[in-house]
Image 1 (cartoon, rainbow over the protein chains, first blue to last red):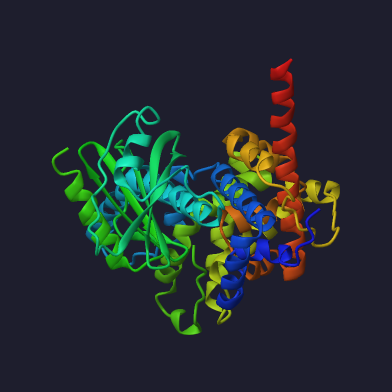
Image 2: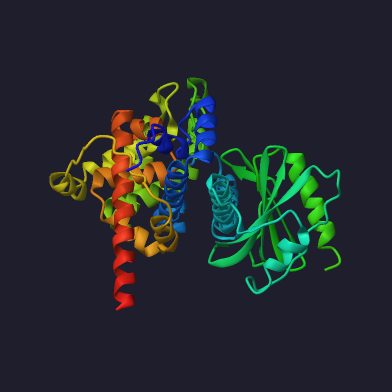
Length: 246
Length: 190
């Protein structure tokens, strides 16, 4: 049994319940404590699994319609106005149904999963499976591991980014690449999947993370980090240029 | 989802419109919670509708500084607890407060690997097996992503109880996964 005094703070850390100073202290501690790091990783994985599995039921469209009818302000003007309100409500309902049941919903779930992957990587003692700052080592490592290929940018000597390595990840039942970069003290995850009918949400995010995503050459890219937004834009530009001629 | 705290100034002559704007985005989460609580889609629909009716009626007396999402979920839960299913469930539910048990493991990866392998159905069955008091806490904290304070307000319990129930709930979910997949692995090896 691990009796590390920090252990009781792990749930609080994973649940985002600590003050910033305590949060930083726990984050620093888990870098040097294998048991706490493992415990944190497990709790994050469990939390993620429960979040995905727990969202089991979706309200049917007729419930939306009936609730809206209940709560909508009562119209008290003429018949024409009532008809136009009805027409507007129908348009709104259709738009709402489309919004709820189409791409953004799927994209949000994907983005949430990728943020979790990024956080898991940050907490792990072995964040990458191929450790190299050389593009020519990292890119070939994915051959045979993924059913697609992609390009990584050649980083200039004065580039603020350092390549740390990569690993294979799974999201929405699909295998993809997570390539990890560092800018100053911040890590950036670049996720690459085969593009499906799901688009990301550029500059979306959650839990203080920035998510920048785009599609290019049949691939879906996501950049996830807690670094400044301009860094994601710069890295995105480099990746877009590297994959431009692919 | 961030907690919404309403200032009294928001409650005015156009309160129906304000209410609609605040409440409708919560519908999916409320319906999901109602389905888990009641185990029945029709009952969940009725619960959600009743929740909206009650909360709309009470919106004009909404207290300043109160968390709107916690308020809505609390109305739904109270509505459920006074329903026939809720009363039946309350009479059979077990309180199992064993203090704040840190549920995380002592060693690396076998459990982590098993949790990663757990499919959605397995995790759902683990959640479904939880006692109601644990189930509602894990749903609010991990699915609705409420802060401890918000969960405490929704369930009207102290934060310490939220923490202990959440820890116990996670421990039981984890154990269910590990046992289920562990057994599968042993059977597969035979």
